Length: 312
Image (cartoon, rainbow, N blue to C red; front, side, top):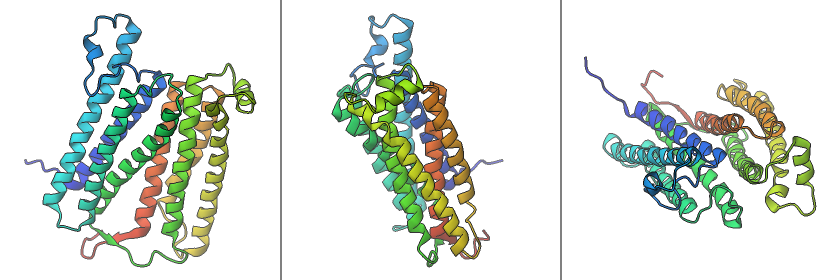
């Protein structure tokens, strides 16, 4: 019996593996292991350093090295997908375009990761440069995941749809994607502030947010929940608009998006009240990417339809 891997299946598999790499990167930040390999990049000379003798130092080095190793594998996987797409699809095909774009975003992701290490924008660093690079890194990660999802989506038996419907609902969903980037940018600042300036209690953290002499990262933290409330309100409005204007009602992909958002709100609240334990930070990060991909699938659902003769 022969085993044949389809391009679509491989593309989704690369997306899942890349998501794992992203989550492991979040674990590196949450545990403070970002300095585990020092400023040695792309290798990790600290693995052989005799000065790394304590269990904590060794663990940080292994955690950071694992992230670098899996990141390298993800880069190779995305590059392989881009090369395969050139043989699998004709010039101008959407799957080929998005696979190439995925590789571009992956290269940028690697360069940003290198900058974080080389300039030591890790661990307890609170420089303005790190505060600016963090949201850029996060946005590029979203774009990378989105490009991989589009490469997988368009490699199937689909074609662009006609008019998306009254009021261009695809543009409204694109607005939600943009809003999520803003929410997550404030979330990155809030996460950095909570890591570098831990609070003794939830109320102590709230008081710090409004203290006159507080660090700018702490004062930025309050804008994350404000952005979350605005974003959640926008999605509620969008769901009602779908029900009102579409003959078939709310699109099926919108329902899991709503469920993910509701779960994310609960996890985010617990994360703040319990002072950001690592387990909740990881759940929060996973749900953020699930929400991004869910909204992207909703956008793609509105922008495409089964190809003629596909039987889909």
